[in-house]
Image (cartoon, rainbow, N blue to C red; front, side):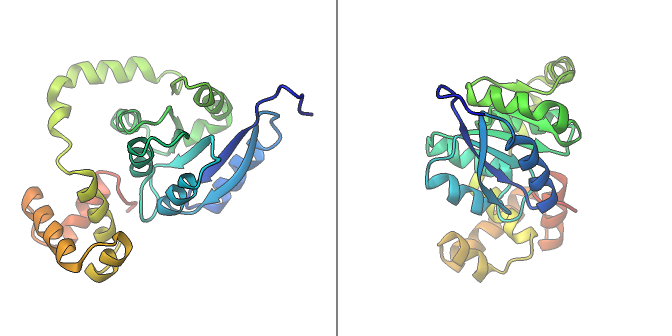
Length: 219
């Protein structure tokens, strides 16, 4: 039962798997301090819903159609929208965690540990505190120190180029991408040519393989 002083955080769940959204909702709704008010099956839908306001916390899957959770987080941060974000991922990879934090997410929860960690992560995010899944910090710091400045060269593409690469890899035509992003087909083709040149690739197939490798789409 809610007390008059309970601050109920309004939550958006964004994942392309309905069963996972249902599982997270069943975990959050009985809690006195959370209520799930919206769901989204892809990143673009999630961003549109967040942009309408009244979302305190968005739980975003890393890999979703149209926009990834990381792309959504970057856009929310750039627009300075008042929504905290948690990244939920199946990837136990320090690079994803760093990308999530750089994108403005409050934390990163591994899906296999969601039943144990998610509530704590949500409460930390609503308080404006970072959350890192237990046991990750020592490994992440060690890996980060060992790699040093090498990571600075890893980000070859701009957020816009990543957005277009993802849509290309998902099989959308140049015309479809132009309509989705409200740009001209010529602009899409110019971005495509730049992607091929920047990545040293020859065709859509190689771009798709690269998109899978860097986690923009699932294989």
